[in-house]
Amino acid sequence: MSRLPEEIIERILARLKGNLRALRSCALASRIFLTKSHKIIYQNLVVVAGTVSSAHIGPDTLTAQRLCEILKDNSNIGLFVRSLHIYEANSRDRNPERPSNEETVARFLPHLRNLECLSIQFPENYLPGSNQG
Figure (cartoon, rainbow, N blue to C red):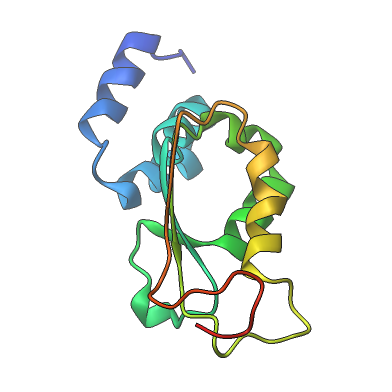
């Protein structure tokens, strides 16, 4: 099988930039698309830290726990992240046996070596390290 020129691959993926579902499909379809798709998919991340129902998480949002799992499976993904937006969920119902939101975020931040922009949004009345929202 002949290889597509890099320029063609980049143009195809650039057209799909806003379509995460299509980019994920490309990453699964061929090794040729894998790294370049991941570079686009993980360039700008939105992460929710804390206990949140899946109904409140959009298709382009990860939980902090899921990001830790992804980075554990493939540490190179962290090199693609340029922008990270963390939304702190209300941790009122936090399971004391699970790591705190701060601990979870602290686990994945060192893997994001090329991070250029970080924003964190806390809920009202947020108390770091507490079980209250």
